[in-house]
Amino acid sequence: MATLLHLDSAVFPQGSASRDVTAAFVEAWREQHPDGEVVYRDLAAEPLPHLDASAVVAGAEDALRAELAGELASADAVLIGAPMYNFSIPSTLKAWLDQVIIVGHNAGPDSTVAGTPVTVVASRGGSYAPGTPREDFEFVQNYLEKVLTGMLGAEVDFIVPELTLAHSKPEMAELIPLADASRAKAFTDAEEKAKSLAVRLAG
Image 1 (cartoon, one colour):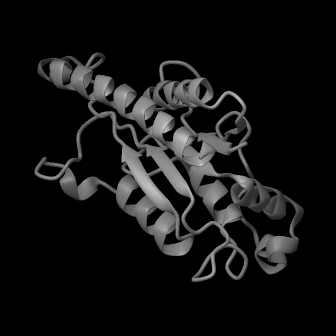
Image 2 (image 1 turned 180 degrees about the horizontal axis):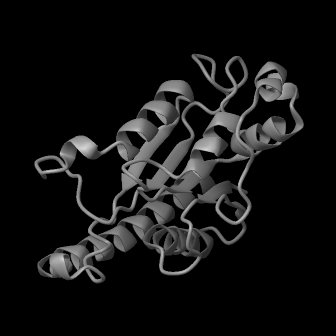
Image 3 (image 1 turned 90 degrees about the vertical axis):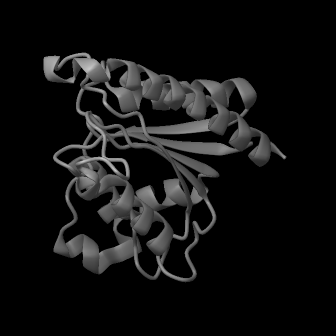
């Protein structure tokens, strides 16, 4: 029985592109792998404390850090909803990363989570794709790819629903068709990724 660790970090519980896509992923995962377990953390509804000096010194001996690291180590796959806020990830997701990454325990060349597949749903209101005017402002994928692969040795894939503000901002109205296409692709990618992972892990 495979375990999926699912994290959401979008502030709003409804109307969130990242939450909608992660929910579609989980639904497809459950359909393909009904006996699998899903461990869920809503980092916006129940934010974790920021890392402090005592927790750094304690490392894996800190109760909260040990709990979070245990969830990560027990996961066969990880799903992260990571909307772009002010060109970066939500502070609640950063707090989880700071708490869960413990050098000498699960970070470094001998990482206990090396090879774990991580799917990140990196939604954003505009577009920061290569060749766009704001390409240089893309810090979500760049940061998470470096942290998750470089420190934890995870296997990371991104699903990127973009232009999510097109329907609410008049100045972006001409981008609505692109936004709708991006959203549709994100759902398709999420469902296909969830199914392929479920099959892979079940085998």
